[in-house]
Image 1 (cartoon, rainbow, N blue to C red):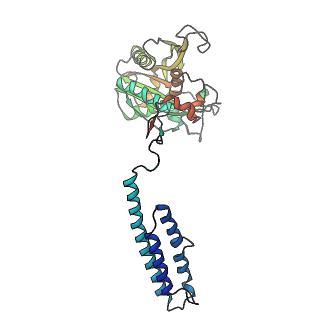
Image 2 (cartoon, helix red, strand yellow; image 1 turned 180 degrees about the vertical axis):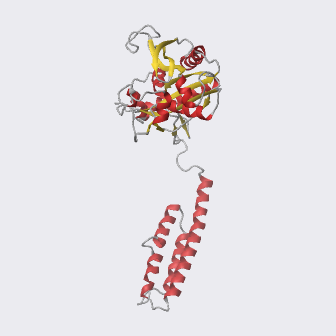
Image 3 (cartoon, helix red, strand yellow; image 1 turned 120 degrees about the vertical axis):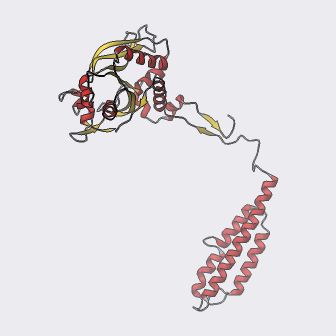
Length: 353
């Protein structure tokens, strides 16, 4: 090192020393320490490169170029020796460490229970010949209410029940608007299901949520009857809950169907004997259904004198609660892995349990 900075002789000495130490390194740890010693932020060659500012202007390019050449040769030799040491380790010990210790395991998850139930329900209706129809979650008031024969003063249209964005746009409260949109595009016969997320201005409690999932069905053709409705609904309930489940229809009112009915099934908890869950009746409400109202056909552009049809709607969250004995709808959206993991068949991969 000259008084004005580093010189060629010092750099050549540094390179000889670095080369000897690299060739004598016997393991990867020592090799890494040498790399840091020479090329790290405070390494010998790094500091040498920073010191060239002390040299005369005409010497700086030459010394700077020489330092970079030495760094390049150091890196090449470092990679060569590292590869040799690594190959030696691989030959001597294919699996470093104690091979008798158990391997690391990774838990694989599964689909959310609501996703699984939705998939199971769709497959049942696919077997009956239904196809899939989908629509927007941000909906027009026209499709969500007016085209479904809801009068202007119907309580469901109040802000207490519906999330309005403005007077004409809202978050859909049901998937029935998809049925109207589908009828506008396609002529009968048609048989569709419309699953999806819906929103209502509800105070959350064990049986109510402001966000939940529905699936509605629609069948339109000539001479469709209540018998067809009962047949499809009963087939679904038997397929999903078991053939031992009894089904009954009770008269009800919906603006978009006439006649309308509530569909009940045997209480899953007491098998119809009566218990607190079914309020001692032996029955649990499962869905609403009915024959499509003529006014709905008119809004969709169908001739109500030429076609008939039925519609039904069920809550995916509700039937999941009924089938799996869940006591609080809020659990589905809590993202509690302890609760959700009981509904999938996870497995350990990478090693045996």
